[in-house]
Amino acid sequence: MIPIDQITGLILAGGRGSRMGGVDKGLQNHHGIPLALHALLRLQPQVGELMINANRNLGAYEALGAPVWPDVLPDYPGPLAGLLAGLERCETPYLVTVPCDTPNFPADLVARLAQALQAEGADIAMAATNEDGVLRTQPVFCLLRTELMEDLVAYLQAGERKIDRWTARHRVAVVPFDDAAAFFNANTVAELQQLQAPHAR
Image 1 (cartoon, helix red, strand yellow):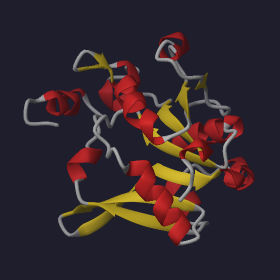
Image 2: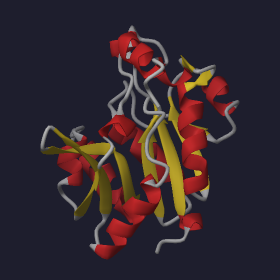
Image 3: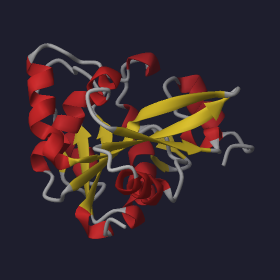
């Protein structure tokens, strides 16, 4: 098993929030505290170190209690830019990423990803959910070896941006999780309200 202190957790909060009217999604209130803090508190017991990738309101993110690193690349190029920012600062052999807008992700997420990565001799372990009989990967929930950084730099320098296309270049262990609701994310104001409904966990 990969020791917990060899894994750094990265909260991805660097997006434009365009489907939520351009607001900084990670700072939106959810049950009284920012969405990104929910993710941070949920990830904290699962990893050795924590970081946040954000491109706006850096002071507000720093106040959540973890180092904050903006994208190295300009113009919000997507989650891979956040991943690169994390890899450049990561001091452990493994980095795990979660988005800031999914506060109920599984409490055993990292342990299960780490187990699969080791068992399959993979470079990346990625969560997947069963939705209507179809296994759908969740590429922003992934654990990867930090030695993949150079390959990611080359990929981004070639003008590529798609996360699935980059992960497909490597050995990926896909880890199915039964509870699709745990991966429900708030992209819009309506989805954030849905997340806060009494029946939501």
